[in-house]
Length: 275
Image 1 (tube, rainbow, N blue to C red):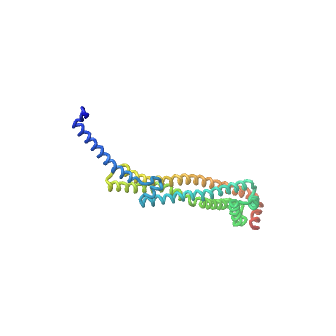
Image 2: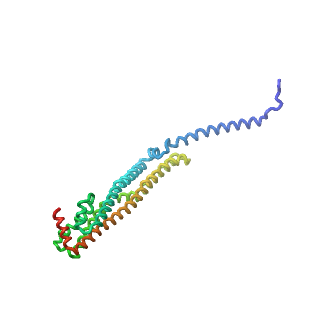
Image 3: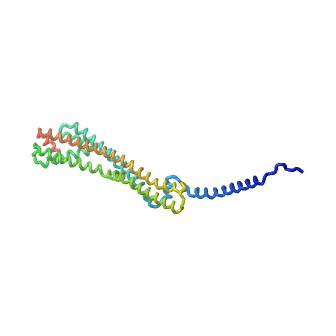
């Protein structure tokens, strides 16, 4: 029979039992605490998942901002193509008018050349004023009346080109504030949820704040392109106005030149009568 010569003291046995009890209690406490934190996290933290988990007011804000962003790109496509073709037409009109020596020559060139609607419009307006002047063409007032008609045409063309551009300015100025409203509403709901759950853990706060900040991000996504596109259109329309003024100046220059030769005005009037 073997006798243990070094028995474990009773005090060591009690310390070991206490340590074992503490470890088991810590393990039991850690397990139920981690489960609720994992359960509080949403299943999908992607933008689409946060959209589905957001409040109804925040969803409405996000939908409105998405529609505003789509409207911005639609305006870019529609007005961008219209402005491009209008500037091309103005360039062709200026090139044709600069090659013409008189109004009759310009009228003949526009009749023979395709895609000269702008030049034909400007020239026909001057011809109409000549017909209404009743052969009193060699006066200073004729040039003033013709210049006034040209200004009216240019103003009408500019108004047509600027239609729809104001929507971009509205989106660029309002969208950030709409997104901020959605963020404030979402954060308010997050704090209400924190008060109801009586927990300030980061896992409890973070999902609601992330959903709220998504509205601010959507507002910036809608506003920044709108402001940039609006500035591009503003410069493009100003350039288009300058081209219209250049074309009108060429016509008024030919009119002033023809006033020194009344026969040229008669030729232009006769061509108008034939049309």
